[in-house]
Image: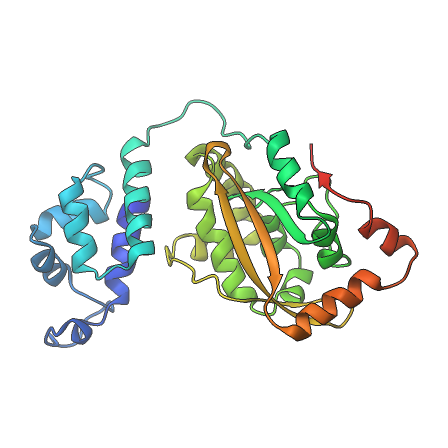
Length: 286
């Protein structure tokens, strides 16, 4: 049985073409990418040891081995951080005799006060599982009519993979799906991530499990949305990690003047039910 660390190393090895590292072609082979022999030589470890890591039979490689693997795979800073994180959860993993449970959903009053200061801007408090824990009226306005907030306990990851409307709402749905799947590895705990993955796998199918095991660090560029009002929105995301709570505060900002004008129009649209709802202020999920 493999491990997240072994899966990541193998996925990165398979994604590298030997010629990009100045290595000679060694004839046709059944699988793409870098050979174990070449990666082991670059990292200064034995092929047998690399095989044990990839297959999950060695769960505790030293820091020096991790650094050598990172150098040999030419990992960037974000990928190196992911490698270290996977090594941590792989080494600390042990069989659990209790049923995995969802994480806590409460948000500290101080964080709610911070979110309130951002009104009427577009901001949300989430965890890495995608649970939407609190949001501003601006976030409600942004997602109005998309179905994202229809549930009493809205979850962005579940929405992306199980609600057909998500594929219309997110212009670059594939990139957003990669982001949400990757973030499960950074969840409040490995047990929490297992809980959501187990729940999603049967309904989301191979589209979800394939992305979960890609271990590709997402770029998180401009978020493009097709708003139900007909507006095409482009937003940048500023994320503040609240490490102690395993949560994050995400603020969405217009990426261009056209988007800024569209959001202003949405805020001023009507003075009826939607307008009243947008002026209703902060909403926290309990």
